[in-house]
Length: 127
Length: 127
DNA sequence: CTCATTTCTTACTATTTTGTTAGTATCTAA
DNA sequence: TTAGATACTAACAAAATAGTAAGAAATGAG
Image 1 (cartoon, rainbow over the protein chains, first blue to last red):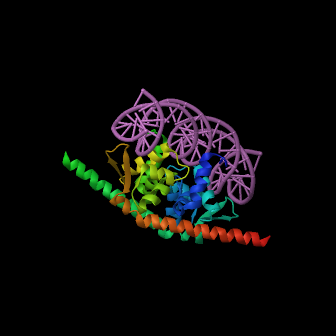
Image 2: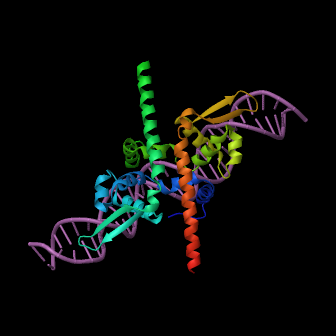
Image 3: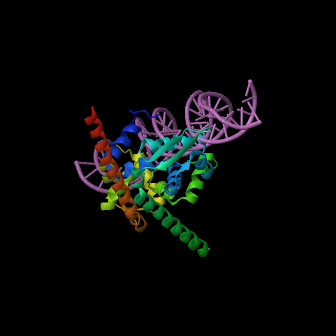
């Protein structure tokens, strides 16, 4: 839970009020959100599929991040009244508007990894 | 300092190894990095100018985030041997390659804020 | 009635990030 | 010699985020 009056929380609020980048970071930040968004970009998935597909995530974290994404209007939770229960998660329309941003981020991430590998290779060559 | 063997740290590493988005988030994430990058995008600035211009940041945080950006090769630290000391920070070439990504993030952030305000207005209208 | 399955909760602990406060070093000018 | 300016550092404390382990609800099958 967040302490609304901590300097920490106030600082974050101030930055978010003045900087679009910070808004975006707030929504897609968090350890597992990139992994979740990657997967839901392609197809809706049920909870257990996400869990299996994201190695290392705990149920608590998966639920927590899905809930946050839902609260932000990025994913939708669809419950099928069956037994055993079935719950599917899908990207919303607002979620789709993140496409270009996510794409740009993924692309830059790849670029950086490439450059990093080159640099490592050069350093090895120097020895 | 990070504990290299914590589950937490290992999870982060695994995600970064498999997801470009996570790489990007790791580099530009952190409370104050967006604010710093916005400012340095326009012009080089000295330490004290950054401090004055970013309301609420402490010196410890400013230095820490600048150091991280420097280590990642995003900004360059230029020291002028004068008294009193003068240190300027500027975006590197690699830093410039983040342009499209940062732009996409800022744009999406603005979009979301707009939609949010509309939604609030509608909710008020319903009452 | 008991089991199995799926989708979560809850309580607790560990780790990481951020903030606070009080310094340090250097030289110049008064 | 003392104060002032600039750019930091270090030690500690608070807050936020992430991980672990156990259990709960719903219900059809056996």
